[in-house]
Amino acid sequence: MPVSRPGPSDSGTRASEVDGYGAPRRLWRGLAQHRPPGVDAVERSWRSPLRGPWLTAVYGSVLLVALPLVIITGLLDYAAYGPQFDQAFPTNVGWLRLPAFDWPTRPSWLFRVTQGLHVTLGIVLVPVVLGKLWSVLPKLFDWPPARSLAQVLERLTLLLLVGGILFQIATGLLNIQYSYVFGFDFYTAHYFGAWIFTGAFVAHVIIKFPRLVTALRSRPLGAELRTPREATRPEPPDPDGLVAAEPGPATVSRRGAVGLVGGGALLLAVLTVGQSLDGPLRRTALLLPRGRQPGTGPNGFPVNRTVAAAGVRPEQTDASWRLTLRGGGRTVTLDRPALLAMAQHTAALPISCVEGWSTRQTWTGVRLRDLAALAGVADPASARVSSLEQAGLFRTAVLAANQVLDPDSLLALRVNGVDLAPDHGYPARVIVPALPGVHCTKWVAEIDFRGRADG
Amino acid sequence: MAERDRPTEGRAGRLRAGYGAAPWHLLLVTAVIVLAGWVALRLAQEATFGRMLLWFVGAVIAHDLVLFPVYASADRALRAVARDRVTLLNYLRVPALGTALLFLVYSPGILRWGETTHEAATGLTQRPYLVRWVVLSAALFLLSGLAYLLRRRQASRQRSESA
Image (cartoon, rainbow over the protein chains, first blue to last red):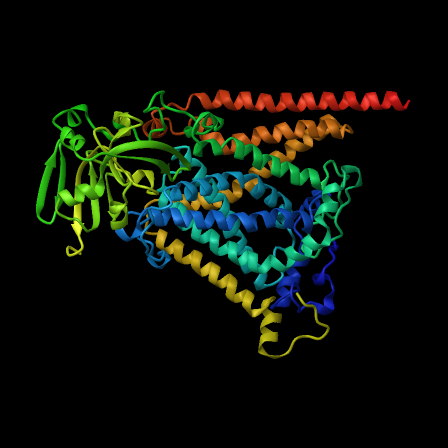
């Protein structure tokens, strides 16, 4: 005898209705009646009296508000890399291409905020995702697994939803900790994974939204958060079967369950947000790479890619170093003293990395637009900056016109009043407001300014 | 979803009855599956596609059939130890969950996965993370233990006052 569960499926007269058996009815009914051994034992083993539509809806509504922010900031990070110059990875995305626009240089903290929000929020939501999955886990072992083709297809999209979010979390967490154990290209996997997840997420929200509203209305939040453990009772049986058939006594109140997930999120927030802060608070990111400073003094801020890792040798950056400017058929070569003799400009700008960390420093150097004028391209359409690095995904970077012409866009020679350290790009590096850190090319060898007429 | 007393009629009604949900449901889930299928076909050209698929499906299996049973059993064991002392149980649960959560999120550093890539990117080694995680976890248990003792003392004082 199947364990009966309230809901439309058990009232045979409405079997053809929503949540009932679809066609062919005999198949779905037969499946429901052939309960494999163990299914009943599993069903009885769900004991928590907290599981139910209300708790699921509370976790769900947090994700409903926060996940779109993670998705949007993630897509903005992709846009910031400049897909129109084929330098956002993955480059070949078919019709999943974003509308092309020039990434702005103002406000200068724009990228600092988008990538910081994407990574920090992504980490902070981990306990919420785990809590949400805990609350619906009995559904995985439901028997029958489906009562109609509609449920088969919906369960398939749930695989995409759960697989998608876990895949995005796992690859994201590994990437920001520089651990590439997965052995595939992070950018490709995370970008396409995001689209799979987003599609499934949108469908899930559309299908479940009425349920979420009903569930939230079923118990006033304030009253629920005032209910102590002793007075915590299971929710009434629900058509989705989230409420346990034989719930045990409560060892935690619903307030406790919400607080536990919230506390976990807070703990992660406290240990992550330091990556985006300057000053002594940076150290609070105790378990992340960017809570640590590589040294002290004016150059003691986080490094992305050391000079040793980039393979730039000391003899390439000594007095024999020359900067080559190209534009409109003209080539200009400058050494470091010549650059220092030009008009110097100082700007306090953040350097922000897509891995979720940023730091604001005071840079001094020559304006990029002055160099463009020197190369004979006063009104450039773009500029390709090349590094001394011989290999690496970010050996060159293309800057759009607005990024070359911004008055704070610099070829920096000094930082915080001293020469750049080798790890920060000595003899010269690019720094542009709101530009992703990896495009602020270090150890610059050449800048090729393209005029409007060059196309 | 509306429940009706009489079976729905017409083509939409027949679709609804046969398929098991409204036509828009079919449209929506088909769109999602087509999108995912298109992405999969596109990625199938990558040499590492098999690994991506493995990680995608593996993530679900790792959560649903490994992580969940592990933490559910750990909680069951903890409940067996605490028996009827629910307060004690929860003062153990909270730091244990905190410790596990920190490990889950920051394990790449704690386990030193990617020593060379970490050092190339940052110029620093991954050595400090393990000790920091242990210290943080110990602090969570210590704080929870102190809070538990305080609470017990308060409770016993209240009991002696009311006695």
